[in-house]
Amino acid sequence: MASERSKDEAAPAAPAAAPAAPAAPAGSGRRGVRASLLLIVITVAVVLVALQALRALPKWINPFAEETKDRSGPVLLQSIRDLHRYEAASGNFQVIVDLEKDARFLPSSLRGSRTLFVGHGSVDAYVDFAKLANGAITVNADRTAATVRLPRAQLEPTTLDAENSHVYATERGLLNRFGDFFSGNPNDQRQLYVLAGQKIQTAAADGGLRERADANTKVMLEGMLKALGFKTVTVEPAAQ
Image (cartoon, rainbow, N blue to C red; front, side, top):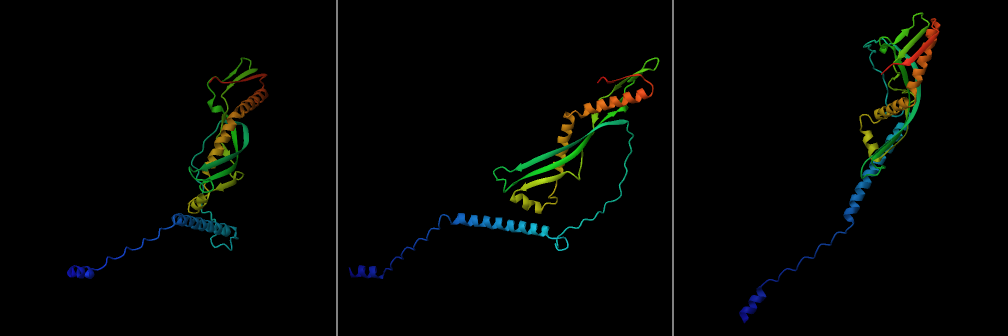
């Protein structure tokens, strides 16, 4: 018994279990993410405000102001083409292009843009006399009556007025503004000009401009041929 007691006294005591680490609060991770996002948004906002402030400065104060220099070469004439057209009518048009671009799953204030573009342009209608067919002009035996069979009037492509066409208003999301700062051409308006030209061309085709050109050409030919001594002049559309 004495030997057993001495063995029990000589055995070292087992170490106590370490206390469990306190659990992290459930919302601490979310707060860290929110703080990081808030810091990014504030940084971008500060950069944008600084850029706007620099743009508002006069050029002689702003160290980042741009200076425009025209280094274009001389204009090269590539070709000359003879025309046999009668410009019979011209229409002037104005169109407002409302172009909106949105991103899926993101609000427009963060990612998206909307632009109002005012486009001014003109479309000319002409009759091509080079397309007169053989026998399109007939004259009676005593040369007192003439009949002219004309091709239908055609429309020229839209000519946009670059001086009067302009962006009226634009709205851009925060990411769009930040991306435009690093873009090589932040004010690219080619799509707006293309859309304005297409809409004006459609309006000219549907607005009776070709019919007005046909009527004006008829009046012009009647007056010219009657001045040459013809008493009766008939102008009619050629067979298609």
